Length: 553
Image (cartoon, rainbow, N blue to C red; front, side, top):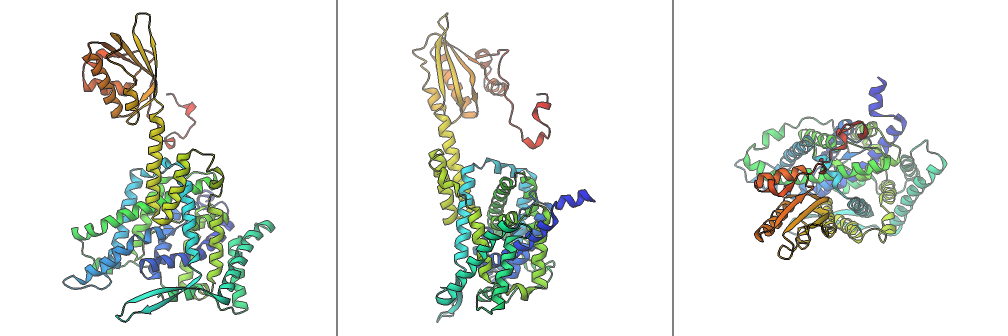
């Protein structure tokens, strides 16, 4: 029984209180994303509850909080609008058809994510360089900060003369703005000061409660969760227990046309969701000095999205803001994520009127403190100390995350880092030249031989000017890819065309096998020395639970 409990928590009090805190911070952000995607806030809250619960129970990273994230929500905007249009063109027109396409897309998104976990693609997140990770954190912190700044405004529904409805934002001013700023600073001050006095109660939750009681006690006219939802076109938090959405199967045409329509959106949403979830998992790994399982997290995220789609919710993924709040509040176990989801459901079902009275200022203050704690301030200090290529990657990823999208930023960062790495290694290829007593010229190759270094490799040799006997020694080199093999083939061909004898030494066994298959003549060219190096493929550390010294290699 104790082992079962320890699987979910090692500190129940911290996990429960942090889960409640995160659920409060989850509501306005999820609702805001619902307005962006132009869906019912209840649909987004349902998705946050289901994805959050499933990922917390079965995910590969205890302490990671999942929900209906904006990075995924924005992908569905165009699809929902186009889906509504397609529905009205059916032989029997269906209103709001875009929502049914959305649910089907979320299910397909989940299937793709499960496939990524089954094929162990989650481990590739380890290939993301640290500058990309820092840029991702900084960019996302800026995005979250800007989203909170937008809370200092009101939305008004404006109907044009031709009947077009549009929400226009008006920034707060005067007394209302000053009260908002004062409450935000009060919340931030409590979060900053309380841990210095005691750590027995979570600072963020205490700040939200104190700020809420003050606004209710002196009857301040401020923007609240309830008024925010109404301004966006919603009717409130009141909902009911999620049930299987049978309308999906009654209205959705199950055919190739539907698959072609939703597949691009599902693939993009699955990719963005996994990237944000896995990078958030990496961040938690660093904050807690523990290690999560990326493949297990992929499967859990996919399962959560399938369940969300079946029960009428939207798609979700790991949320860095809420995760950082959870970690800072002491949430470490799976119970924190479970508590977040169950508390969110409780708010929707039973305590909607109480939660609607929470001032937006209190939640903005919590998010501002999270931004301050998340932003990698050390990046300013180290910019001049790290390689210029890494500094450029850090800045570019931060900027692209803010301007475009998280997934695009990560891809751009990885590509730039890979090109920089290839260039740095390409210029490291060296050839030490010496002559043996019999006049044979020896080229001792040093450095990696791959597609980026083959040009420099080719420039080291002089087939016409070299003596009749030449040896190329790869003892301090590694032949890495097909381009490298082709370069060796060409060099051998040039020397043979000049009627000269060439020998290759210290090639790895896999390289020899490939060359033997390419041409039998290489059996005469390659020298099989007893001291040939033995290269082994790098294995996944998870495949070796014991110290490597205990294995006989």
